[in-house]
Length: 263
Length: 263
Image (cartoon, rainbow over all chains, first blue to last red; front, side, top):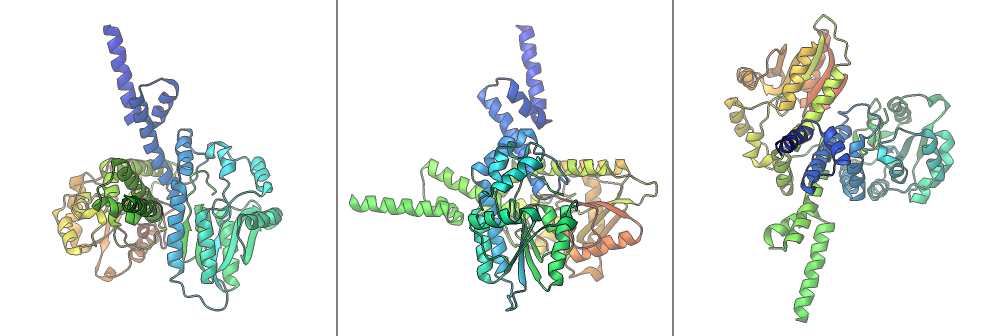
C-alpha cells in the first residue's frame, strides 16, 4: 500500500509538471493514459489554452516562419472552424474593412482600388485541409494542385459581404494570388461559381515570378498597379506576406488563417 | 392565454434576433432581464465569442484606431488577464523572440541591439487599468500620470525571461518609450525596483517630440540608433505604433494588449 501511495504521489507530481510546465507533454498523456474525466478535461483545457496562445502568435506574425500546425492543436483548429469562431472572426474583419472603405473618397476615374488575395481570403480550401490534418501535415503541392483543379472551393460569408460592399462603394477590385498563370481558367471559373464577379485584374504568377518569395512577388505586382495610377486603399489577405513588403495599401486587413504559413 | 403565448413568441423572436444578429443587444438583455440560466449562459457565450473576435481584430491591427474597449467586453478582458491567458500569450511571444534571438550572430562590438517599449511591455499598468474599467473608460492623462509617478508598476514573467535572456545572449538593450523626459528618474527607479537592469539607452520624449504621433517619434529614435551603428535585430512592443514606420527591426514582436490603442 505504501508503495502504491508513493507511486500515486509521483504520478501526480509528474502530472502537475506536465500541466504547468509543459503543455506538449500534457496532451500526450491524455492520449495514452485513461484519466479521470476531470483530470482529462483539465489537461485538455491546458492544451486549448496553449493552442489559443499559439494561434495568436501566428495571427500577429510573432511566430515568424512555421511549417505545420502542432499536432496537439489539431483538435482546437478543427473546433475553431467547425464551431463558427473563424466565421465570426472574419466577419468582424470585413466589418472593420467596410467601415474604413466608407471613409475613402472615391474619384470618378476608377483608380480607387482594393487588393484581395484568393486562397483562404476569397475561396475556402477548408475541405482540402480538413482531409489533410487541418494544417498538421506538411504541404503537399501535388495533392493541393489536384484540389485547386477541381475548382469547387466555396467563398466565405464575410468575403462576399466585403467584396460586394466594396464594389458597391465604387472600388476597383484587383485579385492578386500566388497561384500560377496556368491555373487562370479554373480560378476564374471557381470564383464565378462561388459567386464573385466584376474584378478588374486577376494577377497570377507568371514564368518570371517562379521561385520568388510571396511578399516580393506580391509587392512587385502591387507596385505595377501603383505605376498604372491605382491608389491602393485597402488590401485583404490571410498571410502576412500578402500585406508586407513595399507598395503597401493604406490599410491592410489580415484574415485569420491558423492552418498554414507562406513566407 | 393566447395573448401571453404570443408575447412569449415575440420575446423569443427578439431573443433570437439579439443573439444571432446583434451581440451588443444580447449582453444588454442579460443585464436587465432575469433569464433562465441556460439562456443567460448562451447570451454570455455569444458575447464572449464576439469579444474574442474583437480582441483578435485589435491584436492584428485590423481594427485600426480605436478609443475604448466595448463595454460588453470588459468582463472578457478582465477574465483574459485574471485567469492567466494573457500571461500564457505573452510567454509564447517571449519564447518565439528568444528562439529567433538565438539564431542571430552576435559580434563583439556591442552593436547588436534589441528595442523594448516600456508600458505594457516591460512594466504592467494592469492595477491602474483594473481600477479604470480595463480600458473601457476614455484615457485620463492626469490620472495615468499620477499612477506613473507612483513608480510601482511590476514587470511580467515573460518580459523578465526575454529581457534577461537577450542580455545573456549579448544583445544591447535599448528602451524606447512614449513617456516624457521629465519622467526619466521615476521610470528608471520603477524599472530597477521591478527587477530590470543593464539597459544601454532609455529614450524618452523630449521637448522636440511633443505632439508627434507615436510611430513617427519611435521611428525617428530607432533611426538615430541605426545611424549610431546599431543593428536592430528585434523590437518588442504592445502597440503597432511601436513596430511600424521606418528603421524597423529585423523582427518585430507584438505583445498582447487589448486595453488601449496608441496611434
